[in-house]
Length: 173
Ligand code: SME
Image (cartoon, rainbow, N blue to C red; front, side):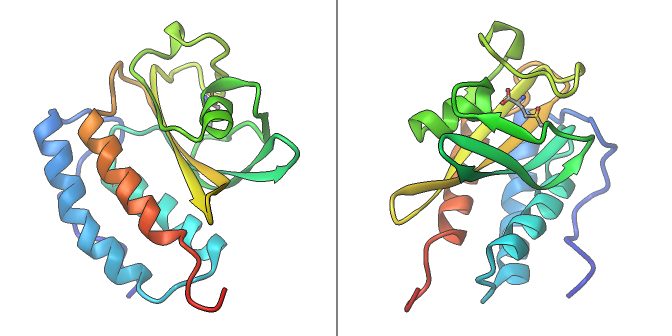
């Protein structure tokens, strides 16, 4: 399958009402599962999720992964959107807070978050979800939005579940 996913076309940057966003995300989930079924390569999964979540989350201006690459250090991974910062220490930004705590960071207003890293001045809200394998943080999924409060609690929970399903080590790994 190479068509991506089938969803109504919505202009990039559009913040749909929350109910429509959740419905769109739920519509995308089985399609994402179908595309990724059986895939175990981490980069292939990250790149495909970045692509398909970008198509699904029309409010995002950045969608992708930062990978743990060293001692308390993240480096950019597969993403969609404008150029992201290359490295983020655990001590910095929303991504760093997620990596440091292992907890999802939902930031409705990035200007109210001390230490937020502005890769894109247009970004107003952000959602960062930890990726773990065998209980160890391996990456974070970073989503940015040019609108205030661009990602709801429900979207965060759905995305946590989605991410949790893909980065568990398979049998024999
Ligand atoms: N805003 C993020 C940095 C990553 S980029 O925006 C792509 C942060 O504060 O962690």
